[in-house]
Amino acid sequence: MHMAAPPDRVWDLVSDVTRIGEFSPETFEAQWVDGATGPRAGARFRGHVRRNGRGPVYWTTCTVIACEPGREFAFGVGAPGRPLNTWRYVLQPAPGGTDVTESFELTPLPLLRLYWALLGWARGRTNISDMRTTLERMKALVEAPAG
Image 1 (cartoon, rainbow, N blue to C red):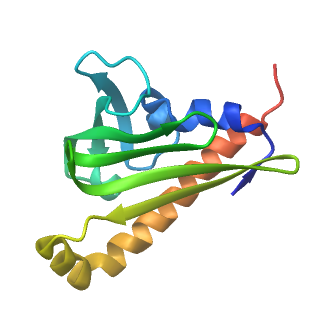
Image 2: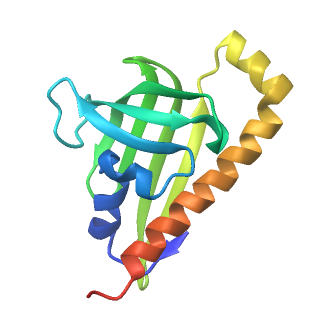
């Protein structure tokens, strides 16, 4: 999605996990843990999730795996070094602003492959819709007139 804002401004939103509740239809809050106070590779945070926007509600622990200001922010969900899935934001400078790509990648474990084969079509559709909503909400904020 194209956002009419410079990469550093978009970066501030995608990398500040404490603001995720403003944008995500599913994760309604997050907090840095283990002494982390902001984004850096290896930093951990907990996200409070309402699965599919309805439930169940649970906390999940995430580890930042890519942290390149103005360019990329990614985190793995699950144990450090053994994530179940990875969420990633890639920022590309573009004429008039920044092109932002949000993506989701499932770790290729046998049980996760089985789950994805049986139910992945529904989850994939939800992820795509939620990523679009998240990016649209971020876009609205970074493109709003200053005031």
